[in-house]
Amino acid sequence: MNKFDSRRKFLKLSTFSTAIFSLTKIFAQKTPSLVKPIVVSTWRNTDANAAAWNILSAAGRSLDAVEQGARVPEANPKDTSVGYGGLPDREGVVTLDACIMDEKSNCGSVAFVQGFKHPVSIARLVMEKTPHVMLVGKGAEQFALSQGFKKENLLTKESEKAWKEWLKKSEYKPYHNPGQHDTIGILALDSNGNLSGACTTSGMAYKMHGRVGDSPIIGAGLYVDGEVGAATATGVGEEMIRIAGSHTIVELMRNGRSPQEACEEAIKRLISKRGEEKAKELSVAFLALNKNGEVGAYSTNNVFEYTISSPDQLHQVIKSKSYYN
Ligand code: SD4
Image (cartoon, rainbow, N blue to C red; front, side):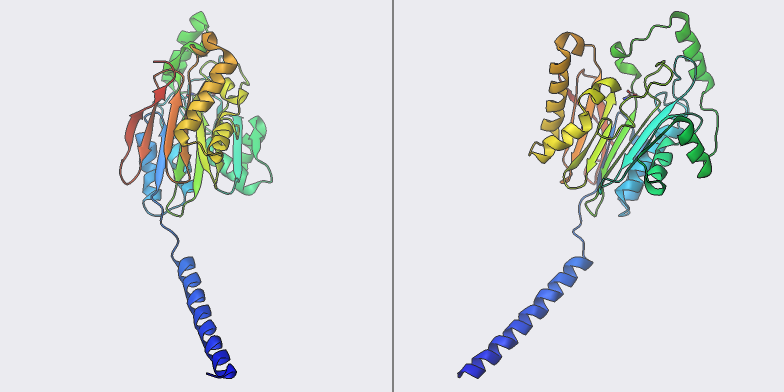
């Protein structure tokens, strides 16, 4: 073979390999890697998970799944820690907090909102339609009205009765009250591998008027990093804010911890800051999901449960491990 023949053969071969390479590239773009979807939420939120699962199992977006999931307890008058039917503050006013975050770190949040059943959906519109992340109080309510949300009374007869009963002694002991937490934090990974999260609450029952906890605070009650994982929290919000709990967990996962190890480390950090004496009274729990669909959960006391939905475990309630038994 002379010099020109081998040059021609070389050119033919490289054209052939370029064509194969381009075909592989096109094929890879057209067939996204299919990930097993999963959704996890705090407490016994099986109906919320079912709503989220409807979206995830039809190859929908995790952002839609967490919003639709969070709206379920928001609308349920029997859930006294979230939305409609939420227990009021000590003035008898129901004030709501919520936030939402997607895989690209887009986020939206509302706090101290009165008279709107679905703060999570208002938070989503803050994210999508304003240049801001967080709107509070009257401003958030004005924005909600401008977006077509309807104002309504959220104080149910049952919640009003409970508040009047509470007023008789007016004892505020959120630290001693593990049974009074039901806030939903919900995290989802969709079949395109995208993570999102949402968190919504009526806050601590009988809190001071104007008090806002961790739930609407990005980094405290919720954090999502699309490259790493997501975390959410429930319990006495002041404690999660103190250690930027959800962000701390995502950073620990970024540095190689599993979701379980990260939740345990965050709880231990919180306990070491507060001291064992105080920590024994605290009801705080974290839930985390990483990019590979692995889940972790850990709490201070042994009352925390979470709900998982995946192709292998449909709407299953699981008891979390805890520091104190
Ligand atoms: C808050 N973390 O407002 C919320 C309360 C909560 O279930 O989780 N309740 O501090």
